[in-house]
Length: 150
Image 1 (cartoon, rainbow, N blue to C red):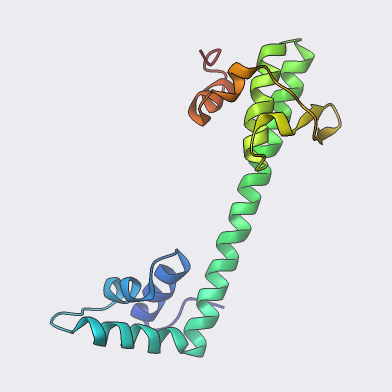
Image 2: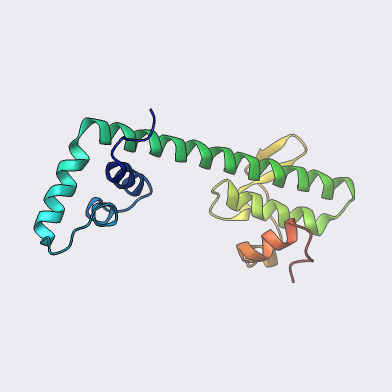
């Protein structure tokens, strides 16, 4: 489906798909001037019920979810490659830190919930306690090769 012909409807759909409340997306897409809050909410609701607008919101949401999945998959692949490179160079400390970041990337509550092996990730990795205290930013700096995370 292409963008909606009505530019304001398209802007509204993009706003809702991006996570805005319907009334906020309506306010951003239309000139509301002296329109009451009640009227704005009613019109936003009515617009959101239009079949073409609903279809466009679903399309935009699906596209964003796909991009997020690809980005996450790419991020995990880069982490895995960094882990393998650290492993090849026997950089144990970096391996553990990359493992901690990978744990966060896959949604583990803590780095102690995963194990990284050359073939993949399992669930019994136990890194030293200091790794668990590193922030995501420190781990990202480490993975990018910007220091030792300390």
